[in-house]
Length: 480
Image 1 (cartoon, rainbow, N blue to C red):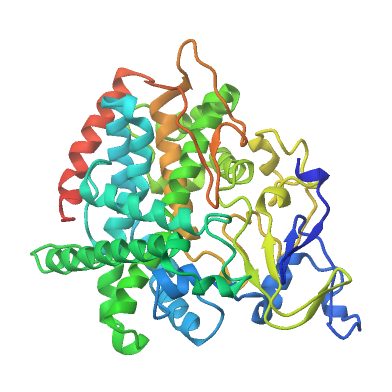
Image 2: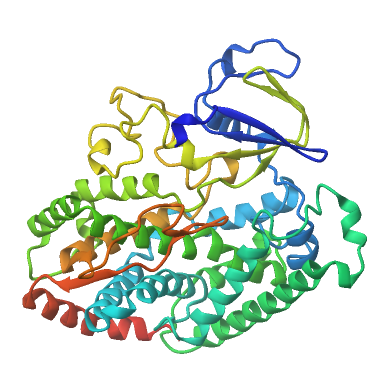
């Protein structure tokens, strides 16, 4: 599919220029037409990386920035500038490696609960996976518990997130930013305005309720530290007021990727159920490292070489933000011999980038492609220090700061899942792995619920899961 696309596609939406980049290889030149040796034959991601000063803005979004997230509070939607830099700096400070790795015990404990939930109520497997990713975000950002998918916090967060994602998807509202006169339409002709303002009310209410609960829980003896508490302690240094601190906590929900982590884990289960030979190799690796007596933990992760290949292949095979997140050019430039005017919106098409001729049989799920290649390509000698193994996390100055947190969650859950369960398809059912029919589309894609069968691999492993859950109950109980 991706191999049939042109490397670069240009579109016009009224006065708006759109460019879709389908291949990481491209040529960049100076806007005045003189070839610059430094940028000759560069992959497009180096435009985002090396020329991030002009490729890091976001397109105007009346819905996001003027209606839902007023007062420049949400880093995901802000244009490149001082307000974005201030929020980004605060995010970088709390998502640095040492702070993220402090969360490993929490991620391990929540993954242990996920095994326990899957063992005892396997029919609710879809919701158990979604609970995990949201629970980690609630605990790490706000110091609060998301004990079940049906808990009010988890349900409320998903409801608000789903609404926010839906309204910001392409085509969900009229092209207001391309045709600004639409902003002046009266209410009866602009239902999208009420929709956006309703989301603003729901989002703010949810967010400030979480902040209030977080402060109350942190005052209790033994209450856990969290990212929000760090943001409050650093307010004098960051210069952020209470509103921006609260919304930065909400931004972390997106940066750390509750939706993206859950979707990737669901795609992993779909891949394991449809590729038993891959599952068998993953189980063999887990057994050689842990045996049947205990489930994998973070101290084992460096030993899981084949599983890490499988994680990378899952991210390549079914990227969550398949179409990429838009970047906007802030001054005239040239790209691959084409003139790109200021204001051009560029999408790095993750789906196609990981399906070019660089990849052997790109539609197939083959973790082995990563064994001898950093990038999963057929040419194992490729050594490009600026090329990224994965583009689902973005590139350049807008790259997702929550990547390490997300990958830690993916690895520990994948390891525990293959150690604990035989993963297959329900008797008499078939699996649909197609993106066209088996996935929920939109800005973020996710597998539809499918006929999964999970069976504990042995009684000893089931008993180990129960024992390990008992061991983490007190730790998880610290979160209010």
